[in-house]
Length: 243
Picture 1 (cartoon, rainbow, N blue to C red):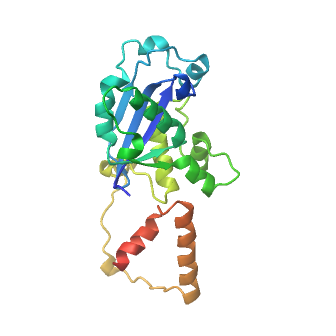
Picture 2 (tube, rainbow, N blue to C red; picture 1 turned 120 degrees about the vertical axis):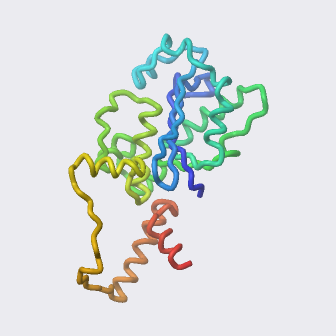
Picture 3 (cartoon, rainbow, N blue to C red; picture 1 turned 180 degrees about the vertical axis):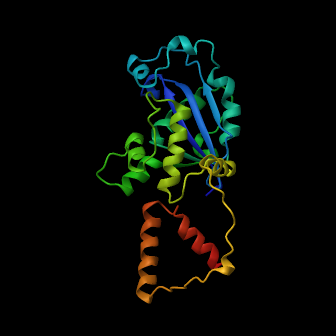
């Protein structure tokens, strides 16, 4: 898996690219080594067609707003350069990838498909494996992981990508972290003086697990790793330590 991941979302004029519907917004959030870098990609696009009324109710983007925006043909090289070689993290990937490939096929110059330059991880499929029989839309996952999305009154590609990045980092067994500076900022705001601890002055008991407890732990990690398609952080750390 690439150390660089791009969490991606799109907004569109409707639901079916085969009926001529187009992308009107692309939002991408970069994650490197499980940290949000702030190197995001965001574009509104002129779809050269009318937006369905039902779609406007979902994302609130009007035809008038997009009149002076760039065409996909104007920005596709910049977009492909941004995502090339990354693992794309998408919720319901078939929808977004289908639209992106349809846009790329409209370009007169030879263009690759998304699968030719990126790998794709679908968080909807991941969530269905982890939480079978439950609602696994983005709002439901936010509630399940206690992520505040109260500012999400309408869908928006960049906003949804930012929320999905937080959801994915928690789903895949790690803590969401905005940046190296973010943790320092939170500490400063809380007024906590984080002084280093001298562990050499402490008497810490060493409690070793029993043979059965160790076996149970290995079994639990294996099941967790399977449920998140090999993305369990602890399994990777154990593997690195062994080597």
